[in-house]
Image (tube, rainbow, N blue to C red; front, side, top):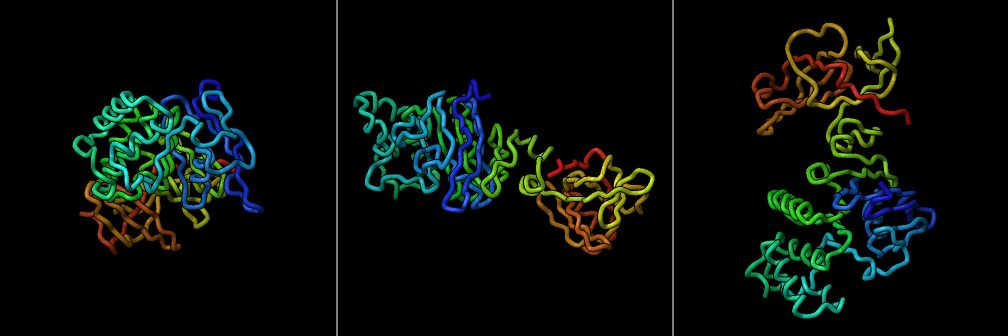
Length: 348
Protein backbone atom coordinates (compact mmCIF):
# COMPACT_ATOMS: atom_id res chain seq x y z
CA UNK A 1 0.00 0.00 0.00
CA UNK A 2 2.92 2.37 0.64
CA UNK A 3 3.15 3.39 -3.03
CA UNK A 4 -0.33 4.99 -2.93
CA UNK A 5 -0.40 5.79 0.78
CA UNK A 6 -1.21 9.23 2.11
CA UNK A 7 0.77 8.71 5.31
CA UNK A 8 3.67 6.30 5.88
CA UNK A 9 5.44 5.55 9.14
CA UNK A 10 8.72 3.93 8.15
CA UNK A 11 10.59 2.26 11.02
CA UNK A 12 9.35 4.92 13.45
CA UNK A 13 10.70 4.52 16.99
CA UNK A 14 11.03 6.50 20.20
CA UNK A 15 13.33 5.70 23.11
CA UNK A 16 13.81 7.50 26.41
CA UNK A 17 17.18 6.33 27.68
CA UNK A 18 16.91 2.58 28.23
CA UNK A 19 13.11 2.68 27.89
CA UNK A 20 11.53 2.00 24.50
CA UNK A 21 8.21 3.84 24.21
CA UNK A 22 7.71 2.81 20.58
CA UNK A 23 9.67 0.07 18.87
CA UNK A 24 9.89 -0.06 15.07
CA UNK A 25 6.54 1.07 13.67
CA UNK A 26 5.76 0.42 10.01
CA UNK A 27 2.34 1.63 8.91
CA UNK A 28 0.83 2.94 5.67
CA UNK A 29 -2.50 4.77 5.68
CA UNK A 30 -4.36 5.01 2.37
CA UNK A 31 -6.13 8.17 1.16
CA UNK A 32 -9.51 8.50 2.88
CA UNK A 33 -8.80 5.65 5.30
CA UNK A 34 -9.40 5.76 9.06
CA UNK A 35 -6.85 3.70 10.99
CA UNK A 36 -7.12 3.32 14.77
CA UNK A 37 -4.09 2.95 17.02
CA UNK A 38 -5.57 0.75 19.73
CA UNK A 39 -4.03 -0.46 22.97
CA UNK A 40 -3.90 -0.05 26.75
CA UNK A 41 -2.33 2.90 28.55
CA UNK A 42 1.42 3.02 28.06
CA UNK A 43 1.47 0.96 24.86
CA UNK A 44 2.94 3.78 22.75
CA UNK A 45 -0.09 4.81 20.72
CA UNK A 46 -0.19 8.46 21.82
CA UNK A 47 3.60 8.76 21.48
CA UNK A 48 3.25 7.48 17.91
CA UNK A 49 0.56 10.04 17.16
CA UNK A 50 2.58 12.87 18.67
CA UNK A 51 5.58 11.90 16.54
CA UNK A 52 3.39 12.17 13.45
CA UNK A 53 2.11 15.56 14.66
CA UNK A 54 5.65 16.83 15.26
CA UNK A 55 5.43 17.25 19.04
CA UNK A 56 7.80 14.34 19.78
CA UNK A 57 11.05 13.78 17.89
CA UNK A 58 11.55 10.20 16.67
CA UNK A 59 14.64 8.31 17.78
CA UNK A 60 14.64 6.49 14.45
CA UNK A 61 12.61 6.19 11.28
CA UNK A 62 10.79 8.52 8.91
CA UNK A 63 7.33 10.05 8.46
CA UNK A 64 6.20 10.50 4.87
CA UNK A 65 3.13 12.56 3.93
CA UNK A 66 2.07 12.23 0.30
CA UNK A 67 5.58 11.00 -0.45
CA UNK A 68 7.31 13.96 1.22
CA UNK A 69 9.56 13.40 4.23
CA UNK A 70 8.16 15.59 7.03
CA UNK A 71 10.14 14.02 9.89
CA UNK A 72 12.13 17.17 10.62
CA UNK A 73 9.41 19.75 10.01
CA UNK A 74 7.75 21.72 12.84
CA UNK A 75 4.06 20.94 13.54
CA UNK A 76 2.64 24.00 11.74
CA UNK A 77 4.38 23.03 8.47
CA UNK A 78 3.17 19.43 8.32
CA UNK A 79 -0.28 19.93 6.71
CA UNK A 80 -1.83 17.99 9.58
CA UNK A 81 -4.92 18.74 11.65
CA UNK A 82 -5.06 17.45 15.22
CA UNK A 83 -7.86 17.07 17.76
CA UNK A 84 -6.49 16.73 21.29
CA UNK A 85 -8.03 14.69 24.09
CA UNK A 86 -8.67 17.89 26.09
CA UNK A 87 -9.82 19.72 22.88
CA UNK A 88 -7.33 22.56 23.76
CA UNK A 89 -9.73 25.32 22.73
CA UNK A 90 -8.68 28.91 23.36
CA UNK A 91 -10.90 29.97 26.27
CA UNK A 92 -10.95 33.67 25.31
CA UNK A 93 -11.92 33.04 21.67
CA UNK A 94 -15.44 32.45 20.38
CA UNK A 95 -16.50 29.35 18.47
CA UNK A 96 -15.96 31.09 15.13
CA UNK A 97 -12.60 32.51 16.23
CA UNK A 98 -11.38 29.11 17.47
CA UNK A 99 -12.26 27.50 14.14
CA UNK A 100 -10.65 30.36 12.21
CA UNK A 101 -7.41 30.31 14.20
CA UNK A 102 -5.38 28.05 11.87
CA UNK A 103 -6.55 29.91 8.79
CA UNK A 104 -5.43 33.26 10.23
CA UNK A 105 -2.01 31.84 11.08
CA UNK A 106 -1.67 30.73 7.47
CA UNK A 107 -2.51 34.19 6.16
CA UNK A 108 -5.72 33.17 4.39
CA UNK A 109 -7.67 36.25 3.15
CA UNK A 110 -10.53 37.36 5.42
CA UNK A 111 -13.37 36.71 2.93
CA UNK A 112 -12.15 33.13 2.42
CA UNK A 113 -11.80 32.63 6.20
CA UNK A 114 -15.39 33.74 6.72
CA UNK A 115 -16.66 31.40 3.99
CA UNK A 116 -14.72 28.36 5.22
CA UNK A 117 -15.65 28.93 8.87
CA UNK A 118 -19.33 29.29 7.92
CA UNK A 119 -19.20 26.05 5.95
CA UNK A 120 -17.57 24.20 8.84
CA UNK A 121 -20.12 25.54 11.33
CA UNK A 122 -22.88 24.26 9.09
CA UNK A 123 -21.24 20.85 8.62
CA UNK A 124 -20.81 20.42 12.39
CA UNK A 125 -24.29 21.72 13.25
CA UNK A 126 -22.95 24.60 15.32
CA UNK A 127 -25.28 27.23 13.83
CA UNK A 128 -26.23 29.90 16.36
CA UNK A 129 -23.22 29.18 18.57
CA UNK A 130 -20.67 31.21 16.62
CA UNK A 131 -20.25 33.91 19.29
CA UNK A 132 -20.17 31.62 22.33
CA UNK A 133 -17.02 30.99 24.37
CA UNK A 134 -15.87 27.41 25.10
CA UNK A 135 -17.10 27.59 28.72
CA UNK A 136 -20.62 28.23 27.40
CA UNK A 137 -20.64 24.99 25.38
CA UNK A 138 -21.44 21.40 26.28
CA UNK A 139 -18.74 18.73 26.03
CA UNK A 140 -20.11 17.51 22.70
CA UNK A 141 -20.19 21.04 21.30
CA UNK A 142 -16.59 21.68 22.41
CA UNK A 143 -15.57 18.46 20.71
CA UNK A 144 -17.18 19.57 17.44
CA UNK A 145 -15.44 22.96 17.62
CA UNK A 146 -12.10 21.18 18.06
CA UNK A 147 -12.87 18.99 15.05
CA UNK A 148 -13.85 22.06 13.03
CA UNK A 149 -10.60 23.83 13.89
CA UNK A 150 -8.65 20.77 12.70
CA UNK A 151 -10.64 20.29 9.47
CA UNK A 152 -11.05 23.88 8.30
CA UNK A 153 -7.40 24.08 7.16
CA UNK A 154 -8.07 21.20 4.71
CA UNK A 155 -5.23 19.06 6.10
CA UNK A 156 -3.78 16.08 4.28
CA UNK A 157 -4.18 13.99 7.45
CA UNK A 158 -6.31 14.35 10.59
CA UNK A 159 -5.00 13.06 13.93
CA UNK A 160 -7.47 12.28 16.72
CA UNK A 161 -6.15 11.67 20.25
CA UNK A 162 -8.87 9.95 22.35
CA UNK A 163 -11.39 12.58 21.16
CA UNK A 164 -14.43 11.03 22.87
CA UNK A 165 -12.97 10.20 26.28
CA UNK A 166 -14.47 13.28 27.98
CA UNK A 167 -18.02 12.54 26.82
CA UNK A 168 -20.64 10.44 28.58
CA UNK A 169 -21.48 7.04 27.08
CA UNK A 170 -24.61 8.08 25.14
CA UNK A 171 -23.08 11.26 23.74
CA UNK A 172 -19.84 9.43 22.91
CA UNK A 173 -21.68 6.89 20.75
CA UNK A 174 -23.64 9.53 18.85
CA UNK A 175 -20.61 11.77 18.35
CA UNK A 176 -18.38 9.03 17.01
CA UNK A 177 -21.08 8.09 14.47
CA UNK A 178 -21.25 11.71 13.33
CA UNK A 179 -17.47 11.95 13.14
CA UNK A 180 -17.32 8.78 11.05
CA UNK A 181 -19.99 10.18 8.72
CA UNK A 182 -18.04 13.42 8.33
CA UNK A 183 -14.75 11.58 7.80
CA UNK A 184 -16.32 9.38 5.12
CA UNK A 185 -18.20 12.19 3.37
CA UNK A 186 -15.09 14.39 3.18
CA UNK A 187 -12.69 11.53 2.39
CA UNK A 188 -10.42 12.44 5.30
CA UNK A 189 -7.28 10.39 5.87
CA UNK A 190 -7.37 9.84 9.63
CA UNK A 191 -5.19 8.35 12.35
CA UNK A 192 -7.20 7.82 15.51
CA UNK A 193 -5.91 6.90 18.99
CA UNK A 194 -8.18 5.05 21.42
CA UNK A 195 -8.05 2.48 24.22
CA UNK A 196 -11.72 1.57 23.63
CA UNK A 197 -12.01 -1.66 21.64
CA UNK A 198 -15.68 -1.16 20.78
CA UNK A 199 -14.95 2.35 19.53
CA UNK A 200 -12.12 1.15 17.29
CA UNK A 201 -14.25 -1.70 15.93
CA UNK A 202 -17.18 0.61 15.23
CA UNK A 203 -15.53 3.32 13.13
CA UNK A 204 -12.19 2.06 11.78
CA UNK A 205 -11.30 0.75 8.37
CA UNK A 206 -8.27 -0.95 9.94
CA UNK A 207 -6.98 -1.33 13.48
CA UNK A 208 -3.33 -1.25 14.55
CA UNK A 209 -3.21 -3.09 17.89
CA UNK A 210 -0.26 -1.97 20.04
CA UNK A 211 1.23 -3.60 23.13
CA UNK A 212 4.33 -2.56 25.07
CA UNK A 213 5.50 -0.24 22.30
CA UNK A 214 5.07 -2.76 19.50
CA UNK A 215 2.58 -3.15 16.69
CA UNK A 216 1.14 -6.62 17.33
CA UNK A 217 -1.38 -6.78 14.48
CA UNK A 218 -2.75 -4.61 11.70
CA UNK A 219 -5.98 -5.54 9.99
CA UNK A 220 -9.66 -4.85 9.50
CA UNK A 221 -11.89 -5.09 12.58
CA UNK A 222 -13.09 -8.51 11.41
CA UNK A 223 -9.56 -9.76 10.77
CA UNK A 224 -8.22 -8.82 14.20
CA UNK A 225 -11.32 -10.25 15.89
CA UNK A 226 -11.70 -13.47 13.91
CA UNK A 227 -7.99 -14.18 13.33
CA UNK A 228 -5.95 -12.61 16.12
CA UNK A 229 -2.20 -12.81 15.61
CA UNK A 230 -1.27 -13.07 19.30
CA UNK A 231 -2.80 -13.99 22.62
CA UNK A 232 -2.75 -10.33 23.63
CA UNK A 233 -4.75 -9.29 20.56
CA UNK A 234 -7.27 -12.07 21.19
CA UNK A 235 -7.78 -11.00 24.79
CA UNK A 236 -7.79 -7.24 24.13
CA UNK A 237 -10.20 -7.28 21.18
CA UNK A 238 -13.45 -8.64 22.57
CA UNK A 239 -13.62 -11.53 25.05
CA UNK A 240 -11.96 -14.90 24.69
CA UNK A 241 -11.55 -18.35 26.19
CA UNK A 242 -8.15 -20.00 25.71
CA UNK A 243 -7.20 -23.66 25.48
CA UNK A 244 -3.68 -25.04 25.51
CA UNK A 245 -4.16 -28.17 23.42
CA UNK A 246 -1.64 -30.98 23.87
CA UNK A 247 -1.38 -34.20 21.81
CA UNK A 248 -3.83 -36.90 22.90
CA UNK A 249 -4.57 -40.53 22.01
CA UNK A 250 -5.76 -41.55 18.55
CA UNK A 251 -4.51 -38.33 17.01
CA UNK A 252 -6.80 -36.03 19.03
CA UNK A 253 -5.80 -33.00 21.06
CA UNK A 254 -6.61 -32.30 24.70
CA UNK A 255 -6.63 -29.10 26.72
CA UNK A 256 -4.37 -28.77 29.75
CA UNK A 257 -7.26 -29.46 32.15
CA UNK A 258 -8.55 -32.59 30.48
CA UNK A 259 -11.16 -31.17 28.11
CA UNK A 260 -11.13 -33.19 24.90
CA UNK A 261 -10.69 -30.94 21.87
CA UNK A 262 -11.31 -31.96 18.27
CA UNK A 263 -8.45 -29.82 17.02
CA UNK A 264 -6.01 -30.42 14.18
CA UNK A 265 -2.81 -29.84 16.14
CA UNK A 266 -1.27 -29.01 19.48
CA UNK A 267 -1.50 -25.23 19.83
CA UNK A 268 -3.08 -22.40 21.79
CA UNK A 269 -6.68 -22.00 20.67
CA UNK A 270 -9.08 -19.07 21.04
CA UNK A 271 -12.79 -19.69 21.50
CA UNK A 272 -15.08 -16.66 21.47
CA UNK A 273 -17.90 -16.72 24.07
CA UNK A 274 -20.65 -16.24 21.46
CA UNK A 275 -19.63 -19.52 19.79
CA UNK A 276 -20.45 -21.59 22.87
CA UNK A 277 -23.91 -23.13 23.33
CA UNK A 278 -25.36 -24.17 26.68
CA UNK A 279 -27.73 -27.10 27.23
CA UNK A 280 -28.57 -29.58 29.97
CA UNK A 281 -27.59 -32.83 28.22
CA UNK A 282 -24.44 -34.60 29.42
CA UNK A 283 -21.35 -34.12 27.24
CA UNK A 284 -20.62 -36.78 24.65
CA UNK A 285 -17.43 -36.64 22.61
CA UNK A 286 -14.96 -33.76 22.24
CA UNK A 287 -15.59 -30.03 22.33
CA UNK A 288 -17.98 -30.22 25.26
CA UNK A 289 -17.61 -29.65 28.99
CA UNK A 290 -20.04 -29.93 31.91
CA UNK A 291 -20.05 -27.49 34.80
CA UNK A 292 -22.14 -25.22 36.98
CA UNK A 293 -23.46 -21.78 36.06
CA UNK A 294 -21.70 -19.43 38.47
CA UNK A 295 -22.95 -16.12 37.14
CA UNK A 296 -25.67 -15.05 34.71
CA UNK A 297 -25.96 -11.45 33.49
CA UNK A 298 -28.86 -10.08 31.48
CA UNK A 299 -27.56 -7.43 29.03
CA UNK A 300 -30.79 -6.48 27.25
CA UNK A 301 -30.14 -7.83 23.76
CA UNK A 302 -27.96 -10.66 25.03
CA UNK A 303 -27.00 -12.64 28.14
CA UNK A 304 -23.60 -13.53 29.52
CA UNK A 305 -22.80 -16.53 31.68
CA UNK A 306 -19.80 -17.85 33.57
CA UNK A 307 -19.66 -21.66 33.62
CA UNK A 308 -17.37 -23.08 36.32
CA UNK A 309 -15.87 -26.47 35.38
CA UNK A 310 -14.83 -29.17 37.89
CA UNK A 311 -11.14 -28.45 37.33
CA UNK A 312 -11.65 -24.81 38.28
CA UNK A 313 -11.65 -23.30 34.79
CA UNK A 314 -14.27 -20.62 34.11
CA UNK A 315 -15.77 -20.51 30.63
CA UNK A 316 -17.31 -17.25 29.46
CA UNK A 317 -20.46 -17.80 27.40
CA UNK A 318 -22.55 -15.25 25.50
CA UNK A 319 -25.90 -15.97 23.92
CA UNK A 320 -29.38 -14.61 23.27
CA UNK A 321 -31.23 -12.84 26.08
CA UNK A 322 -33.42 -15.93 26.57
CA UNK A 323 -30.37 -17.74 27.95
CA UNK A 324 -30.99 -15.94 31.25
CA UNK A 325 -34.49 -17.49 31.41
CA UNK A 326 -33.22 -21.06 31.12
CA UNK A 327 -30.12 -21.02 33.34
CA UNK A 328 -29.71 -19.53 36.80
CA UNK A 329 -26.66 -19.41 39.07
CA UNK A 330 -26.17 -22.89 40.49
CA UNK A 331 -27.73 -24.64 37.48
CA UNK A 332 -25.84 -27.55 35.92
CA UNK A 333 -25.08 -26.98 32.23
CA UNK A 334 -22.98 -28.33 29.39
CA UNK A 335 -21.01 -26.06 27.08
CA UNK A 336 -20.59 -27.16 23.47
CA UNK A 337 -18.80 -25.64 20.49
CA UNK A 338 -17.93 -26.47 16.91
CA UNK A 339 -14.38 -27.42 15.89
CA UNK A 340 -14.43 -24.63 13.29
CA UNK A 341 -14.80 -22.04 16.07
CA UNK A 342 -11.46 -23.01 17.66
CA UNK A 343 -8.97 -20.55 16.19
CA UNK A 344 -5.30 -21.49 16.53
CA UNK A 345 -2.92 -18.70 17.47
CA UNK A 346 0.33 -18.51 15.49
CA UNK A 347 3.34 -19.86 17.36
CA UNK A 348 5.17 -17.03 19.18
